[in-house]
Amino acid sequence: MIIAVDGPSAAGKGTLSRRLAAHFGLVHLDTGALYRAVALAVLRAKGDPGDPDTCIAAAKALDRETLDDPEIRSERTAAAASKLAPIPEVRAVLLSYQRNFATRPPGEAKGAVLDGRDIGTVVCPDADVKLFVTASAEARAARRLKELRERGIEAISSHVLQDMKERDARDQARAVAPMVPAQDAIVLDTTDLDANAAFEKALEMIASRDVA
Ligand code: DC
Image (cartoon, rainbow, N blue to C red; front, side, top):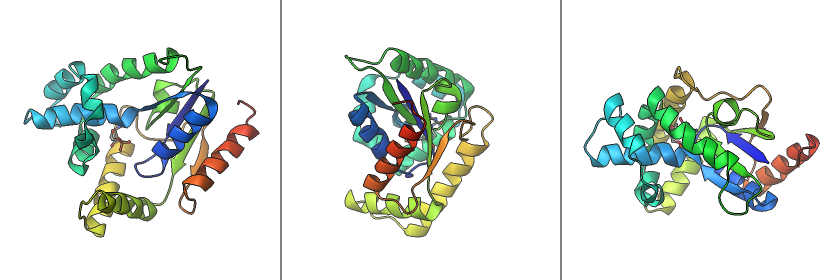
């Protein structure tokens, strides 16, 4: 069983995906972490996340340890990830990793939940369930601000909202694998839902499709 979860940042994809994976006995892959890890490697080497050659080399040399580096969660890394994400060769390198994970999930798992931007459209177009999780930019910025403050990072609300809108625009406008709901995706708007309510709603939606 493959569940594809796409949508913009801070819409609740990650939490929902982890809970769905636990519920159905699947393994979870946060595909944004792959783009972030490449971005962090580029930044650490003082490279330019807009330069294709630098980013392609970093994607090819990506090591698993970078995926666990807490620094991949920083806003700086996130911004760099969305700058290198449009580079087709970077996407191609990461695509094979993601497809491998989906078709041959690690361990005894009987399937996988992948979350990202293009899972239902490009990475796993034959996924059994496709969810597109979204929320208003204001609600997402408020969540991100709370998360940053909980990590002890001071941030200005209007800047977080602005960064988020810029990132959404880049993710939606790129020529290769832009962030759009797959035609057969179920759209879940979490603006007024907490994590529990979003999970319950997703289970209801999945049950109504009769795939689980
Ligand atoms: O989900 P995230 O915020 O961790 O993703 C970081 C960036 O990576 C995002 O701005 C776009 C890119 N990304 C992508 O292009 N395709 C994916 N499947 C996942 C992430």
